[in-house]
Image (cartoon, rainbow, N blue to C red; front, side, top):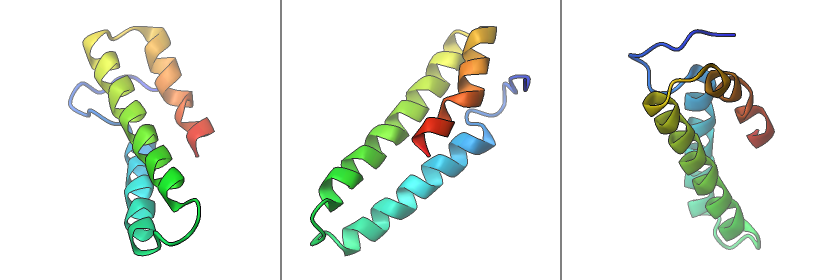
Length: 78
């Protein structure tokens, strides 16, 4: 398990997931005529919000179980 680095707000995995969600949302803006584009856009925004919320909660309440959760919860989002 990785130790929490107090200077970093997001882990590498969290940053990459948010980056991909932003990239996908930019592409979705170009292709809004696709039937489920709006739903995917909203889902990407919810994933991004969840990642930022978990990072914030972990920073406020740095428990070992929260670090374990942060190490693994991004996996189902991908």
